[in-house]
Image 1 (cartoon, rainbow, N blue to C red):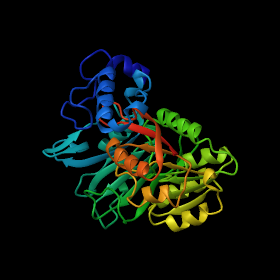
Image 2 (cartoon, one colour):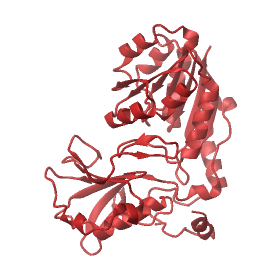
Image 3 (tube, rainbow, N blue to C red):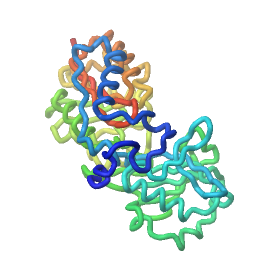
Amino acid sequence: MVGEWEEWKGGGLPRGCVPCCPGCAPDMASAAEERDRKMAWLEKSLALWKDRREDLRDGPEEQRWGYRDKVCLRAAWLPETGWALGLRRKDGLVAIPECPRHSRRVRNMISWLRHHLPAAENFPLVYYVQAGGQGTLVLKSREDPDLSWMETAPDPGEAAGLEGLWLHRHPGAGRRVFGRGSWRLLWGVPRSRDAQGLVYGPRSFQQVRPSLHLEALERAEAFLSPKPGDGVVDLYCGTGGSLRRWQERGAMALGVEMGGEALECAAVNAPGATLLRGSCAQRLPQMDRWLDPLAPERRLFYANPPRLGLEPEMGPWMGSRGGFVRGAYLSCSSGTLARDLKVLEREGFAVVSLHPYNFFPGTPHVEVLACLHRR
């Protein structure tokens, strides 16, 4: 990536950028300009806690490019040029075959697909999803397609660095990427490991800038300070990377997650943790029973919800029945974070500090870690 960065930083649009692409800010702001904009947005959206907000943390300048190793791309067949993969706009699809925000592995795999996939009449591809070393072809179909083309296609591992390639038949594919249709491993292995040695699969959620995510987790761990005899309830625990951290400090850990694949991986990544599948609101009775033997000063929580934030039932539960003494909340939406922090304050928590991270360079999005303790 350093060589590519040297080429891109020369000015103007980097090689591979498409001006009308909706994925990045339209004016390709510099790192300093982007920082000022994001801090201004946080000043507005999290105004109630501006005295507790730290400066935006970012990685090295060259890591603003080539950092996306997890993508979800729409696919469209164009008779003149073949397959196009990119992002959807109201007026059609914007193809981004050489997007400089994408990792080299993603760009190589896009090239592999464009050169070797059959035409749409034989292969109704709607999405291509890549999570690190695992790729998925999402077809709008009830029937298995003809896969004879794979017999002559080059090895996607050698050509693109992929580790597993899946086929997902989803007859209702459109607004929703994945559905209840069948999954089939076409090539390679069904699981991969990230830089921390954590197992993940094709549907597993992953943060796109692992170094900054690790920094945020270290900050949360330092604030929560879990120790033997403590219990950490990890809401929306994913594949269990955070669960493993609490266990390494000697604490007991309980994780709640909707995705079955993620929980399968969490069982490998955090053996011994209590795992519950379902929404957090659905699993309140089980969490009550798990917390019951613990004194309030032994109860900690960590939450990393999707963009919609905490479920409405969670704030009151965390403040009353949960009885937690400290908590850390990592959010990808400062709007829903502000809403949830107001609820948690009404339930007896105080916001100690807010730590913004630039997980998504080139976009308007910013991640914020909130540290809370019981008043």
